[in-house]
Amino acid sequence: MLTVKNLTFSYNKTPVLKDLSFTAKQGENVAIIGESGSGKSTLLNLIFGESDLNQGQIFWKDEQVLGPKYNLVVGYDFMKYVSQEFDLMPFITVEENIGKHLSNFFPEEKKERTAELLEVVELTELAKTKVKTLSGGQKQRVALARALAKQPEIILLDEPFSHIDNFQKQSLRRNVFRYLKDKNITCVVATHDREDVLGFADRMIVLYDNKIVVNDSPENLFKNPEAPLIASFFGEFNIIGDAIIYAHQLKMVTNSELKATVIHAYFKGHYYLIEALLDDDVVFFESKTNLEKNTTQYLEIIR
Ligand code: ADP
Ligand code: MG
Image (cartoon, rainbow, N blue to C red; front, side, top):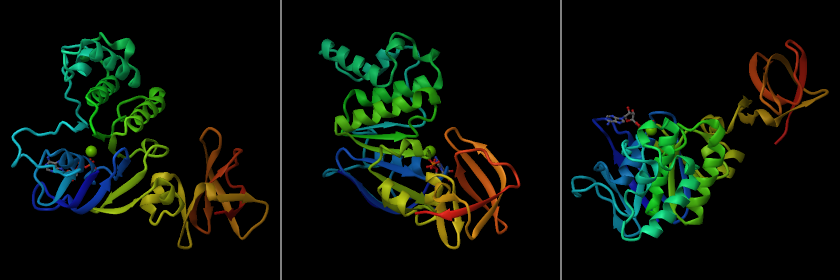
């Protein structure tokens, strides 16, 4: 289990992270969510032991993770970190990068392991290609595979799919997160992309204003988004009265008290997102068909 206890950290005078506490169990997938600049990368750096805390402690099981003041070499064997910079070796091949930290005393195992990981990150065809010739997304996949090569007990992923194009993102996410679950590897993933979270994370920790504002399952937070910040993570929403109502919770009906005037219809694939005016407030709802501008639509809130 990863334990973060009362962690406070600042680069200069103002704290970036204030009194954070949370845990991640063995095999659990915990997502760290927050706007750009909210401290996600800083938190992962600290868990990895790259800087000294101002206050608090970090433990993996019984072992305290210590910063550079106490450790000559940053990093621990049980933990791997895929940061936003990938730190690959550009002049050797993809498979050599992945196998870099695997022992040459077991050539068969090394070969098998490298092949398995190439499949997880869908790079088998590029095994013999030099890393310097790869695209950003391909490099990111090599970095992921290399971090998994030695089977860490815990892995820290910083926006791990940010450079990967949409054609491959979906299957890659499934591969990587399934692999981590299969091997019971604890995963702490920093992201602002809900697609990295939904269907994969066991818990979501939301950072805001230097603190943890919520720590709960995605399901619970989706059903009861306590603040607009949380609702916005899941999709378009409205504030009607004091309540947070998702766009999909506004149902089109033939008559009701809620009378909206259509402003615009956005094609979204299997539905249109409709922007409309409801008593001078802009609201969003979903429609199966395109709606004309200035037409009237009655709405009902369903929960
Ligand atoms: P996120 O990953 O959520 O975008 P970061 O952890 O990168 O956020 O940054 C959190 C805050 O710390 C930001 O205000 C950023 O400008 C600041 N920061 C990040 N790295 C450094 C650094 N090396 N020195 C000083 N300030 C930093
Ligand atoms: Mg970051």
